Length: 295
Image: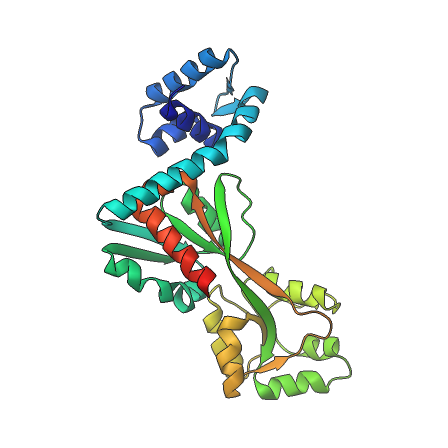
């Protein structure tokens, strides 16, 4: 039972498609079919039901994937790291994620990669686009502040950030002067990452402040834009600490203290396991993880 057949099985299992697995592994669809057929003969049990579009795993495939998947990934990661240490790290690594986090945090860890000869390609994207582009193989690594829902992707938390309610000092004073914090917040425009207000609603719920159902006055997926508007005296918002700590210290922004509970947001590095076969991607991933952990 060869390693290549096992890797082919895992790829078909994760992608639910012979053709997609063939593209991911740089094989022909005939090769992929042969690998799966050989495994089925060796096990004496069918692994997939062929559908009009894709395949459906059998119970035998579920059991084999559970026993094999993570062990195979770890072995391939170790091999890729070994190759990275012994070979020239050339080529590009494509990274996408939240624009403000990449600009303010990730870039601090890129100079060493550039010095190693790796070219870096950065692209802003929200969580859904991060997942889609990684699965389709258009990017190598992603950064997301929200849980990854696709089981084909792996992720690891790289940073925990306290969430802070902030506004310009004059706006914060008006909010705090109201008869209740809920009333004060409700009187002022709210600025949000998106229409569904993920950070704002999490902070409000954690502090028992209701939903303040007003639609955001401004939305932008780059929180630096919202920070500039806040500093100019427009509304209030929820910001991760790394984006507002300096401005609070300078008096440009003021914090509206959480009345009950300090909330936080987890940022994760995300990747498709097969991307780690490339030494430069495995090296970049490990360098970013180590750099974030040291912080």
